[in-house]
Amino acid sequence: MTTAPLAAGLLAAVLVVSGCTAPDEPTTTTTGSDMFTNPVIATDSPDPHAIRVGDTWYLFHTNGDGRNVPVHTSPDLVDWTPAGDALPELPAWADPGKTWAPEAIALAPDRFVLYYTVAGRSSGRQCVGRAVASAPQGPYRDDSSGPMICQAELGGAIDASPFRDTDGTLWLLWKNDGNAVGQDTWLWSQRLSADGLELVGEPTKLLKQTESWEGHLIEGPFFWRRDGKLYLFFAANAYDRAEYAEGYAICESPTGPCVKAPENPILRSNAAASGPGHASMVESDGRTWLLYHAWPPGQEGSVAPGRQTWLDEVVWRDGRPVVKGPTGTPQPRPLPHRQTR
Image (cartoon, rainbow, N blue to C red; front, side, top):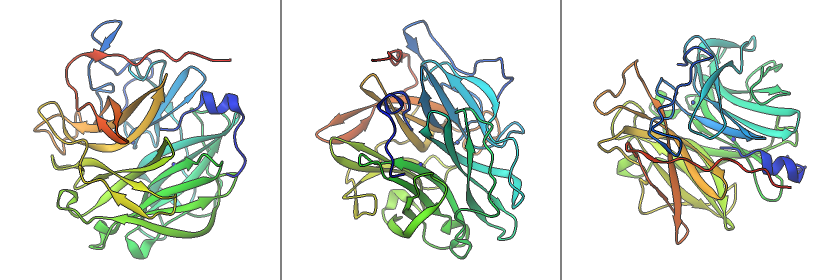
């Protein structure tokens, strides 16, 4: 997570940003009508990503509870209710059990594309697929005869993230899973066709692991443009360790070059949460929020509760994003979305 821009109404309604309990059971922790306490999804919900359509948020995350792509809905980014499986059937070329880091984008009021990581049968590696739905919660269907991206010789391809730039062009970010085979992990970008189903031109390498805090890998990339600057956010280090954290770079364009921020990481473990990362960003009434997963301290790698979904505000100081978190104490809820004419 395209050359034709969306209608103004859709752009206002949809904002792009990885188990579950029973469908009628909310999964958040609240402390009163004006306050909330993290995590906002207390069950295992890794790699969270959300879009807003109308007054409803739709959050997707990595497979769990027998679902390939669990989807949750919320009116306010805080109270989330499980809403089934957004991708109930995998394509014939994929194997179940490793459907990771799904991200969706709206291309029209009745057309949504989901990019997801899945086990490619012929390659034996993780690959990126794409699926289409007429409603944001799905069901999404992948009618392809093979993966969109695989890069088997580089360890596989994971963590695809779509991005619509201000000029209307569509782009896709992903990571080659080099750490799975003892190679470097690069973040890549490539132009997408207007329908979001095909890659255009050649891929570009943007960044790889270079800093001590990143350990052996960087992953989970997403773009965010603000005040003319293009930010590339990413997670780094081992996902099941307290050292896992979130950083960012500033890029000249979707094909780079990109320069990492000297203050990285901007989100790291503390007494409230461990191993925070693989984030996505949303905006609500002018305020910016980060959705990310984290472990309870001391329970890194656990099956239950696993990686829970957290929500914290991002403020911008002299062009630098500052995450107010991980925050484990009560904090004001995001303001409810207000439709504008």
